[in-house]
Length: 83
Image (cartoon, rainbow, N blue to C red; front, side):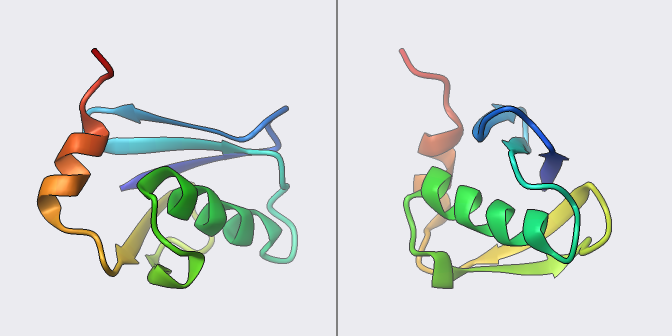
């Protein structure tokens, strides 16, 4: 799950357990926050923007994305804190 925080001073993504908190500069107006969130999720996971699609939560802060081209082992490594 991804938790969106629109209207932040800068774009930052941080894991908190199984939740990816993404702070984005865009406001939740006319889908701008969702578009920025898709780009931020793609950047965080190291995939192309076209590999990320919003599945649920278009008007909610809690969102569910489908990501193609990312295996579960890679996702686990991305969620581990840096050593």
